[in-house]
Structures are given as structure tokens and as C-alpha cells.
Length: 131
Length: 131
DNA sequence: ACGAGTCATGAGAACGATTCTCACCGTAGT
DNA sequence: ACTACGGTGAGAATCGTTCTCATGACTCGT
Image 1 (tube, each protein chain N blue to C red):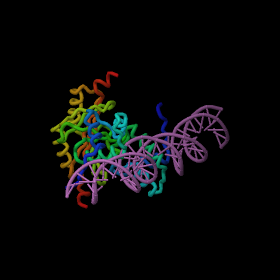
Image 2: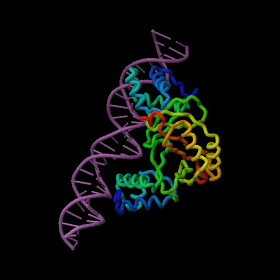
Image 3: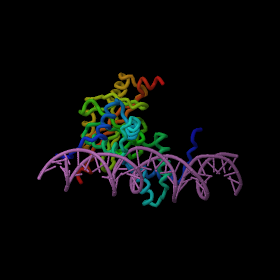
Image 4: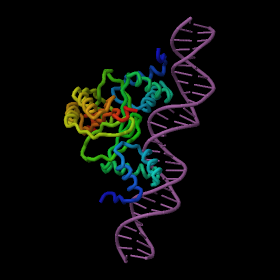
């Protein structure tokens, strides 16, 4: 009985917009996208919904170099990383068992606990390179 | 003959404050630190200096989960990663040849170019755990 | 040492992303 | 339907960071 979480038109719209794209999108992009599409949703609501989804582990969040948050609904809910296109946001889900082990090991060997890691790969996808 | 870059009192103070700590610090923290220490430096100057140092590869920059930028002068200038304490900012420099290779390989295999990676480990250091 | 031209500084305004406030609306359960 | 309570949106408020611009500090040629 944590947070009830009602299903509203707005939340559905945000979730749908998220599902519709394979790319990482910022809250503002999603907001515009919804507005253009006709399903206007308040910016604050977009943020709230994204935060709720992120807290529930239903969307993945990452930050660009300049600190903006990007969201994406991923196929798998298990832990994984991404290879993201710097220009279009397209992402490929990746997992690196080796890396996971390495991270945990390094952390422990330095006396740190509650080890967590941030591993994202950035690049330019084939389509964007063609431009 | 790129940017002249004059050595001023302020820039020296920022560099010194940076050298004085082994931990990752935010621009605001450094600004306060300098103020308390008596070497008052404008916040804008702190930001400008940090940016210049970062551009020159003289300091490492990373972002917290909430998007704030943290700076640290590292012992080595070659590419490396960090194991950072979530609560005090203390950092241990790390390199993972395996990981580097893995990242490049994965990127290429997906048809992405100009691959770059973000790999940081977060944890709680022994001292902070004791609190 | 003098002056001109240039880069640096700092206070405060401006910004962009995100969060908060609060009065009003919609959903879910009975 | 009725009610109780979460949800919503417009706009204000925050926060980190960058920009503006008038003033100050270097440097170099003379």
C-alpha cells in the first residue's frame, strides 16, 4: 500500500509517448511532443510522471554532459547499460557482465561499500554520421 | 598561441584550493572555501577558471546524480576513471584497461563511431560509513 | 616609466532545467 | 452518484551555471 498511483489521461499520454520512441528524450522534448500531438500535458506533470516512472524502475534515466536528464523506456527491467547516439538519442541496450564484476571488485578492494556504477557509452550512430 | 591565459591571483587561488583537496568539489563549494579562507573570488570567476582548467584537461569533471558538476585535480593526466565517495567526495583514481577495450569494441560492433564512455564508480568510503 | 590595447574580474542579471505552490479537477471505491 | 484524496496546470520559486558590462590589472612597445 505505498503510493496508490492513479491512471490518468496525462500519465497514459506520457507513458505512450515514451513507448513510441526508441530514443532517450528529455522531459521538455516529451512535453513538446505531446503538445504537438494534441495531448497537451502540463510540464510539471511530465516531470512528475517521469520521476514516478523512474522511481518505479519503469524508465531509465541518464544525464548528458551538460546535466540534462534523458528518459527512455527500456525493453528489459534488469540492470543494463546503454550505447547512446550523441545527436539523435537512439540507444542500444547493453550488458557487460565483465564490467559489473570489475566494478564491484575494484570498489571493495578500496574499502568502499554500497558500490554502484555509472557506465554509459556515447557515440554517433550510422544514420547520424551520414548527415 | 591559443588562449594567452594570464596567471592572476584569482586563478592561482582556485588552483590552490583545488590542489589542497583530494576530493571532488563543486564550484560553489570551492567558492565558499575560498571566501572563508580569505581569498575571496567571484563566483563567476570560479566557474570560468574551472571551465578553463577542464578544457585544458587539468582537472577532471563529473556529474552527480542530480546534475551538479564536481571538479578535482588528478594526479595523472592520462585517461582514467574514479571511485568516488557519495558523501564526502573523496576519490580514488582507477583505470580499467579491460573496460576500455570492452567499450570500444561494443561501440564499434553496433556501428557507432567516435565512441566515448562515462564510467564512474560510487560508494561510501570507510570513514563515512563509520559515521 | 607611460600609455594603449587586451584580457580578467565581479556584481548582478539572465538562463534553462527542474521543483514547488495552490486552487481546482478527476478517479476510485462505496 | 457522493466523497475523499490523489492529480493537474499555470506560474512562481529554486538552483546551478552562464552572460553582461563597467571597472581593474597585465603586457608590450616606446
